Length: 273
Picture 1 (cartoon, rainbow, N blue to C red):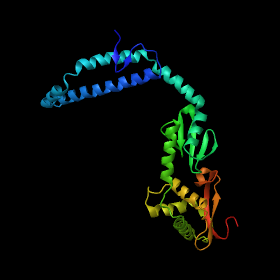
Picture 2 (spheres, rainbow, N blue to C red):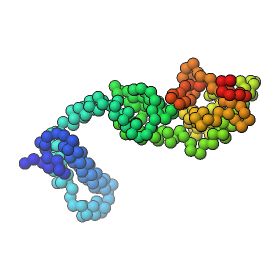
Picture 3 (tube, rainbow, N blue to C red):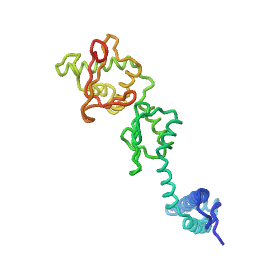
Picture 4 (tube, rainbow, N blue to C red):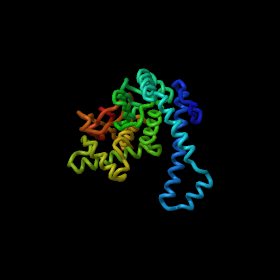
């Protein structure tokens, strides 16, 4: 007689239906094991009356547990889970490029770049490495390669970076003040280029260590240009100077891409003038 475990019949042909049944069987078995473990814990702790109360309420779980252990063992042995996963993963990898871009487009997220590196909404960097089964969002592991989960994490990242309460005029003024402070501390003219990392350091110290990341600073600077407000109330225009390498600056997003910026200044006139 074949063992039956919550709808799974040992010997069924493997497929998605069988996989679902096997999973349901394992979930059900885990619940039984958890109940039996709880009963043994009460006994080990010397809580004999509580253990007896549990037995009176649920009955002796041992016979049913033993039966389902044997049935689940047979179900596991009859379903080639490893080969099923390998075949499904091979299919997913073969179609991953197209699937990812379709899911990104359907989500409404704007993307630039080409496989395997993208910039989403000008701000979030997405890099894929299927050989290592790795997805990086702004250089950090996404925790999943599944396209729908990646989209969810990108949206969460965008919410993290974009402060809805940001007043770009106020932020531009704060940026100018921080630039002037760095220039003054170094004996430079207020209109000289200064290290953007030092400017960021001033703003970060004002907000509290750990409360203002470089990425959020970069997103805020990006919004100054995106919203067409690179000029302060006193007519000074913000200019950025690119870094020669990533180690020499802070990444600032821009429409269609971004760049590492080494320095910034405020000058009287139009940008680049």
